[in-house]
Length: 77
Image (cartoon, rainbow, N blue to C red):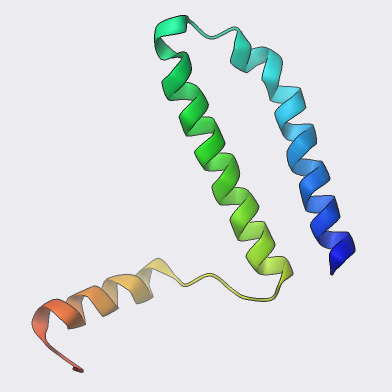
């Protein structure tokens, strides 16, 4: 398991290093938005990969929507 986590970190670092030249060439007015979006997507992918490595499957969006509807409608309280 530790080897898989180390590999995940190495892959994430390689991805950032490969994308960095392209990210630095972006126009100044859009640079912050692009960098925030890029790192949010990278963090999301890293988190999902980590959860799958730890055998803790992420909750499906349908389950979250169902829970919200049940909460709003007062079902199952």
